[in-house]
Image (cartoon, rainbow, N blue to C red; front, side, top):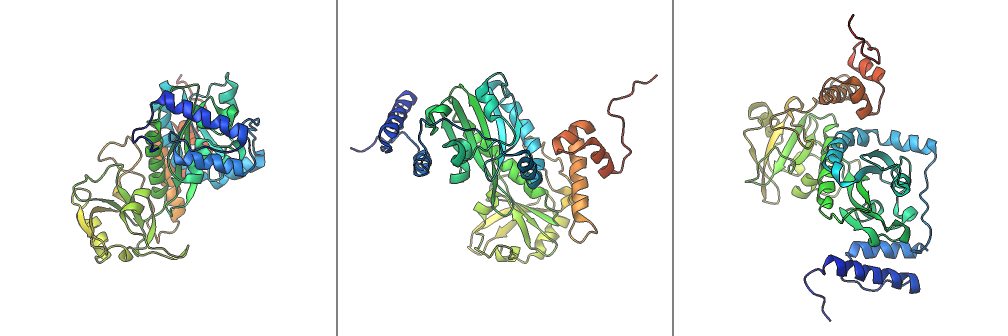
Length: 392
């Protein structure tokens, strides 16, 4: 019998999934369930193949303190890019009893923000730094599925593999670095909350904002904002490509990887923008000098398609964090060839954090994960006392 083209009502869908769970527990076989998204079925099958059973107790294990320090040290760039977005995201979901978690590529939680109800052991158990929430550790969750499937997901109650996870609802999206490698994922989790599949869109949008921020951390000579003709440039839907002074591609965001036919190449092999675009690459730098944001150029591709683009130097590149007002500028990035590009880029990021914190150095230091003294030292300013001194 052919399945209906329309999805079943939520009540029927959850009943069908509950039936599939019982069959899985009783016979270890997963029946075909049209109400279940294919990626959920694949995740359940991977769990079964690993010898897991739905009725097993779930072990929410922490990595060691040394391993957690190593995980966070290895993901400092991701944490810097994610924290401003996480702050805005948690404000957006403040009234929904969800909290946000950031993991690395292995599924280890490296950041938690939002209202974790510490009185509820179910929330307290998972809302912790250093916990392993990968699929191999806790079965089918948004975290494990997003990392395995490399796509945004929504998972509600009984769609989790383990019976013990049936109170959670979660949305997840993978995070990709400027070279297109998965470096972690962003998760929104609630306990005993109504079904909110629209959170899949919110978490995917927030993940894209983090990826854009990761790209803008790269010291670059030119930033290209790309889109199809007729689409307004300057928004969060733009493709972003960072170039060095010789026109080599340093990295791009997920949208740009969809707009541009990126050729397969050996990792570490430089990719020049002239391999992608059918125009003299020096014209891009000329456009940055003479046109600016309000005069997009036509960008022909070797495939025959045409995009529109604006070319921006680091001193006028638009900040792509969500909520940035039109016309605002992002952190200046050191140009290649400068004496200490990484140091200058680091200083620019710290200045930007202080600016976003409205001059509150302590708040900026917390957002960056460094001490107040480090902020003052990097900015070349004398350290101030931890508490403000009242004037006499």
